[in-house]
Length: 137
Image 1 (spheres, rainbow, N blue to C red):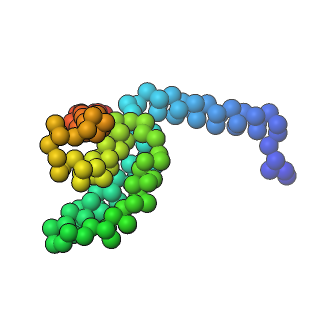
Image 2: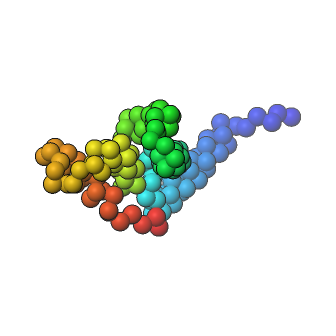
């Protein structure tokens, strides 16, 4: 006795699987998107960035030399810069990274003392960071 299915029953099974996948796809499409959908690779770097930023802040509290921490953070920040942001959460992470590395320039001078180009950058960073998070549904 053969366990092989006839072409008709195999085609029926394939159609059934396709119909099930299509129903699931429609269901997912109707579900609200999360605020970080589309930026999963970028957002996976956020916890590393935050951990090293806290470590850097703690190091600065004890000494004036954050260089070893900056060297560890550099590849993470390079990757954050390389990846495009597709969501507000991704854009806010990029703004946080930019602020972090520009802090030594920005924090040492009053906003009015910055050159025109730096004022634009600081204004953009502040505005992006101040935006309310998108609802996560």
